[in-house]
Length: 373
Image (cartoon, rainbow, N blue to C red):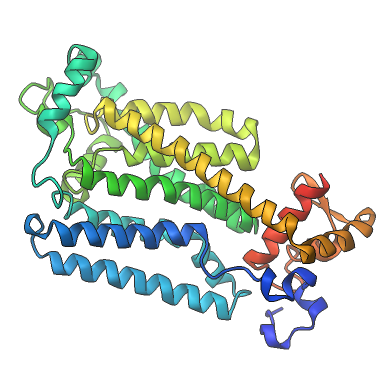
């Protein structure tokens, strides 16, 4: 059944409740994930404008940032008009990850805006001061073709982190959980993108090129494929913090919040392997790894606190309280979604029979579920 336009639905058909009827209860068009993306674009454009002497063709980058912001604005406006459209819902919740490769490529061309040079010499001095040598050189002693292929498999698995969990949540129509996941990952990786402008380093594979033995790591299939990708599509100076580490750990921590400790423990070994792989493959310093970990845990903490404040705001809203009491009165006949019990009207939002659920619908359901559990 095709979803009706919002103006054609009765309140019962839309799944509306008192919470959706008043201006004070309407969901803002801008959400934390939007603030992350648009905030990054604004800050990056400002830094490029300030340091434009070190950025060839800098007006093109400013135009690229502006065009990306315009596309985001158009998407948000389209979703506001048609919140029950499934394609728009998917794009509205996942676009920070969709545009990330484009933003990453643009950022790679601007990393020297502030410093004007790469800081690998200083990073190598720091690594030597901490470790008494270079970990990348120490690992040369254990290099083997099977081990190289294994670590490259861990490294390549990052792309699955960014694709598989969001797709699964979207297919299951767990919109609030999807938003939490995307917001956490976006907070982590976009922070890394800004870090590239502050500390532009190329990594041991470049700075220690004359000392590495063997000069090139040899694998079977994944190793040469990833090396080809890095040689032609990876911008120089984008190593600190490690976006691979930050993004993978952001997913891992978000999955723990969403699915519980069992899913987290299943994902943890692969995440640890990926963390080790970025050093073994010589793409990152250990400082890049430490910074990536710090960014991921900070992003998880910040998103958790942000969502907690939103829940407190809902709890203090008299319209939400009235809606919650109405649903609690019929909870005995409710349906189970996730780990809690919700009213039949809220459960029908996920059935696909009446309408495509909106982001606001899902957040109201999760809020009521948390209160009644």
